[in-house]
Length: 68
Image (cartoon, rainbow, N blue to C red):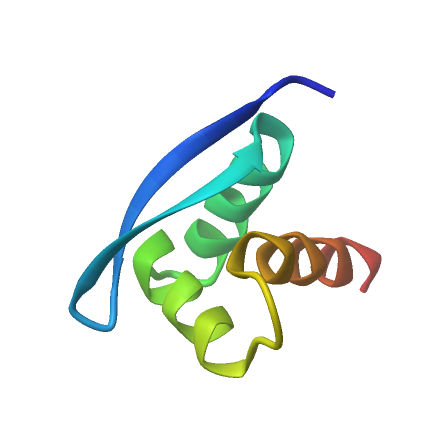
């Protein structure tokens, strides 16, 4: 896997950043596009239901999505 990169987002009206591997970021972008929404909107949904770290929650979301 490639190295970790920080990505800036705006969710729930505030700026934040997540650190993800390029592969997870690209998969997240693809999922958002497939669902017809922005990355910010998708991450906001993940943020609302997460337990623990946002970056980890995104990884789990992406993993579950590709397993379906």
